[in-house]
Image 1 (cartoon, rainbow, N blue to C red):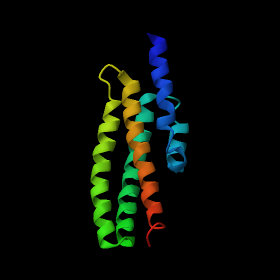
Image 2 (cartoon, rainbow, N blue to C red; image 1 turned 90 degrees about the horizontal axis):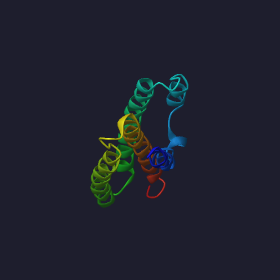
Image 3 (tube, helix red, strand yellow; image 1 turned 120 degrees about the vertical axis):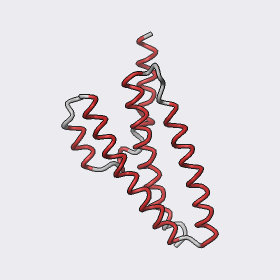
Image 4 (cartoon, rainbow, N blue to C red; image 1 turned 90 degrees about the vertical axis):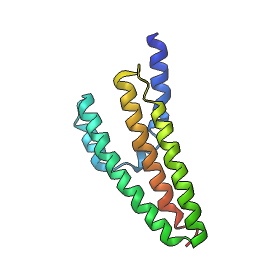
Length: 129
């Protein structure tokens, strides 16, 4: 049984590391100071998730100003769908029997997915000025 859990955990690592290059230096510093303690790690993730959410909202508003009215409306619709997807996808990791690792994976998923989407939206202005 432990081997299966380990494989599932290791299988989740690439998904949680997708946004690693777009996370803040403050997050990296925070994680370096945790000593592996779960409450501290969760705190670092929570702070970074808040920062990435602010970044996402800023990028969304900036993208809206760079797009035509039709494209801005499309982006609004896509963003609403994306939020539902992100929340449902990350909720999947919240296995009630997964314990602390499920909590970590869920929170990392929210943080990384939000960071990736923020970067995507930041780059939209280059597609349609």
